[in-house]
Image (cartoon, rainbow, N blue to C red; front, side, top):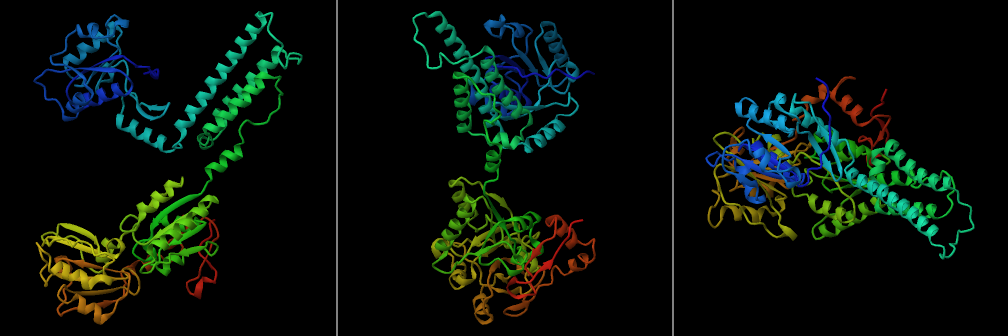
Length: 578
């Protein structure tokens, strides 16, 4: 079968006949409305109208002819300009019915474009899977061989394009149109001046201007426009602004008014446009619960490539040891009463570096969006013109219980998880949750307020927690000095007071705390963490996991802080790309 002729049809004010009442009919109606056409739905009143279709009929006032299809619909429901012949027909019921075959035959005879769902042989056209960005449209078709595959290919293509490309296409189109308009205006003015014998002489009257000069100026602009569209990287095109377009048009207007010089000076400086694309970047990344092996590869790449790292105070030293020696690190100076000031300081330092064109990594503990002020920081930088890239981190609210042998959920014990903060805004106590026997509750940033938190649970106004409710305090999860205190709400304050505090830590409350390991006494203390030791053997040798990861994130020779030399003043070779 020869390839189809792909076209872009201006469907403004067209009449599209949609036959059917299923979800596909709703999608066809939406597409018609999107391209400026008027859909008319034909389906019996007794038909089972899909919810989505019914909603579109109500929201957009789609005309619904509540009856079966009639042959006369093809030649009576259209526009006056087409003698009431409809512009396109969509049959959504599939091609197995005799009605679909009959409608296809009628449409072919009347030369009406027809599309029948899942029946390429009955179609005269197919719907492309399209990506739209302003005036830019990209369509993909598999010629009826697989619409899902076409959709995937479209997504792959669209994801590789700069986000601002549609705007750039619009701007370049404006330049092309206004160049043509200015040329036309100059030609018209020249003809008028030639006909007016009494017109005064212009300032350039005595300057020699040959017909080839005007054509050369015009050709130079259009050739330049064609060349940048053909050869410039798409990201450079996407960096063109409205101010750039105005400069081009002013230059063109000047060259059209006087004899142009045939220099090759570029209308736009490519280096300047590329510099715009290389502006500062801000990355918000989660460092996970503590162990460096629990970093995502994306965050590790960010650590290795950042120009400045702004780290939370509680980001563990083993994670910071991965930072290259050349990269400056600013640790948040947060302490009670100074949290907001420390946050403002990080904002200021980050913004200064961004304005210098640097890549800034805001390294946060756990996950950036889970009690990490991540969204607040994203909004701050967005207000200053920088859109942050946010990288997730493994949150301690789920990983710390796992490392303490506590399943967050367990069949027959707990079927839901509630993650709370133990410290409210500006240090105020948060509202305690009600007790549910089938719920696991994880309190982050709670240990310093444990004396107030526990009574608020056991003395809850409506649903108090039984004092015998199992709980666990987990500190420095996944780090070598991890500590777990297993107890109950009745004894947890006494246990922490006697054993001391080892922040950062969290409190897990619920029956799941005793599923895998029980506390036979008032409390039990477990020190140390060996949960990832099994991976050490897998990292040995040139083909191990550690070697693989270093090749992934370190393409060349890299120097990093040596954790075995105080303050990171030593040098250690961690990978050489071959």
